[in-house]
Length: 100
Image 1 (spheres, rainbow, N blue to C red):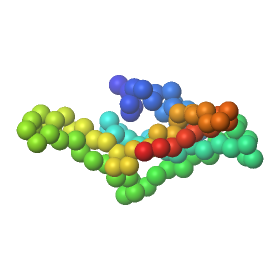
Image 2 (image 1 turned 90 degrees about the vertical axis):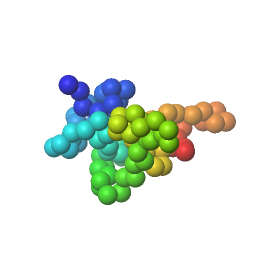
Image 3 (image 1 turned 90 degrees about the horizontal axis):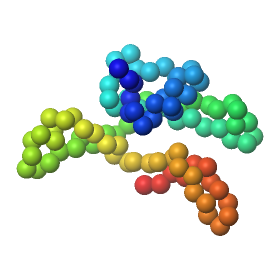
Image 4 (image 1 turned 60 degrees about the vertical axis):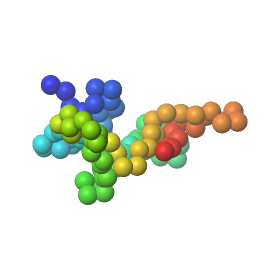
């Protein structure tokens, strides 16, 4: 059995190594912490920030004509943001670039 999304296993393991504690009752939709490192603190000293459960908006995915979607219990974040993808703008590489 694995914890979380198989795509994020390496990052999940990294978070655990940094001291993140997974929820006692695990689910397919456990939210990982925010991990930040910067030049001033040193990239070898990342900081971990947990998000309070009540601040996380999730949308249950349904289909108006097919009840099977509801039975799958699929969810998505109310405001999806991807921050582990870098972008090159004008010759400057931004390591983390959140977008919606």
